[in-house]
Image (cartoon, rainbow, N blue to C red; front, side, top):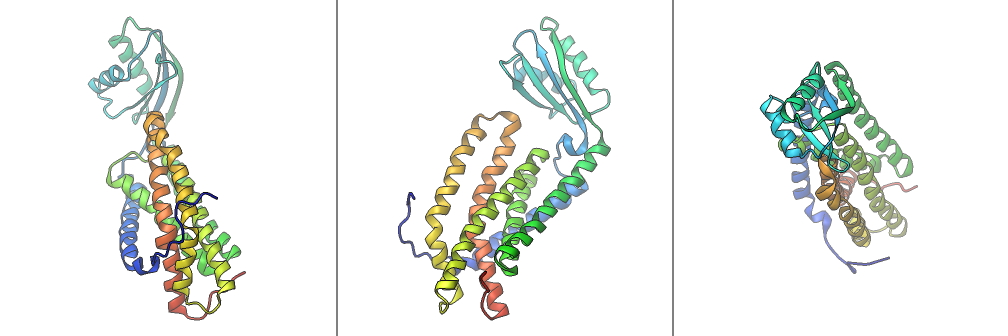
Amino acid sequence: MLQILHKTNINFMGWKNISFTVSGLFIVLGIVGLIQVSRGKANLGIDFVGGTTMQLSFKDQMPVEKARTALDKSGFVGASIQQVGEGNKILIRVRESEGTSDKIQSLFRQEFPNNAFQVDSIMEIGPVIGKAVQRDALVAITVSMIAIILYIAFRFEFKFGVAAAIATIHDVFAVLGIFYILNWEINLLIVTALLTLAGYSLTDTVVVFDRIRENLKRNKKDALPQLVNYSINEVLSRTIITSLTVVIVLIPLVLFGGEVLHDFSIALLMGVIVGTYSSVFVASPILVVWQAKSGGRLITK
């Protein structure tokens, strides 16, 4: 396998107090964001608060800037507009629902009388449905966290499972908190990104835990902090290469993926970075600290 680092000897456990402080701030920020999302106080997309999505096909090209200017003048400030296909189709998403599609059609007929259009699709989501989707999204994230604990506990042992779950929750909360503090829109695509990065973070953590388990069997006399340190060092090159591979794929999506995929790709990109950090500086130190408090030795399956 490609090696970008050879025989490192970094004392990762020596940084655990600093990493716990940084991670604690991320978790607090994420909890605040989660509370605000559940209260409907964050910048939520129409999936959660209701609104209208419609696609229009124009006879001639319709620049996004002209469409946005027309919508802003008519009070639809903050509408999401994406160009589709060869430039004569646009996808519009606004938070208002009742009667919105008729208003937008009338607006474009007045503003662009020489550029006829037809309506390809219209989808309206009421606030009641939006609330149900918001609740289901929170349930999906919660269930996934419980499943992670059970899976890791079955594959390793309970302490490994809890450590992995805390690291994964940390990653989800970190990205959610950043989106909230920057007032970026949180929609179903972002929830999808959060669940995806939870899976990525778990995979990265399992690789580290697998090496720790192997070394626990081979080196039964070594102190756990020392054993965890050289276990992480042994898989560090693999961890960095895997993360860089994903980052290389995500950067073009961020730059050229269009308005709809932009925030989704940003969330995944942040999640990969935070997930790589947490597998080294969150999950493993939690395991060391917990074992030091409880005493005994970790059981390996």
